[in-house]
Length: 168
Ligand SMILES: [Zn+2]
Image (cartoon, rainbow, N blue to C red; front, side, top):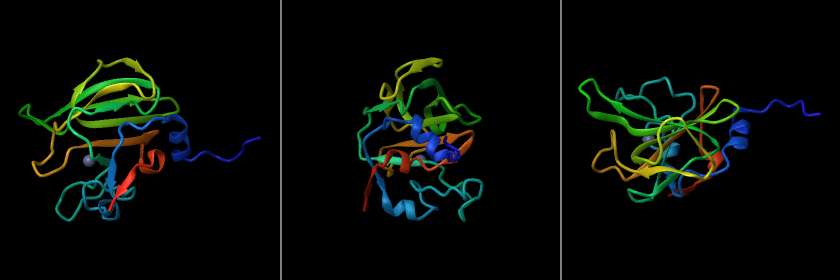
């Protein structure tokens, strides 16, 4: 009989069986929780010294605009767009969230386009949209997918689940 309690990471691993994109993560950024691309589980609610919020996902780079983005697991997708008070697209830009089983949710940001509308049932590995540069991406910032995983509302580091290769 299994008595060990599954960690949020164990739960997510059981649900997220496909990688949303092939790409690489900047290793240097991950060591530095103040840099975009890193992940600091204790820093999510803190502010950086420059007043910006800590990064709360992974930036997976190394692909072109228009690359397919795939669902990480079976679930129901919702399409979203972040706008400021004047109606300009900002922040995450065009993005998708997927509600999976066992309280797992995923988020895919800065998309160029969506493949389906909200409420669509998708399967792991199914193409749901295209990599883009919508939202708050500086001109000098390389094209990437901003990706987040939550388990019962708690943010976890996606990297141990998907095991992207690291850039030096
Ligand atoms: Zn990001």
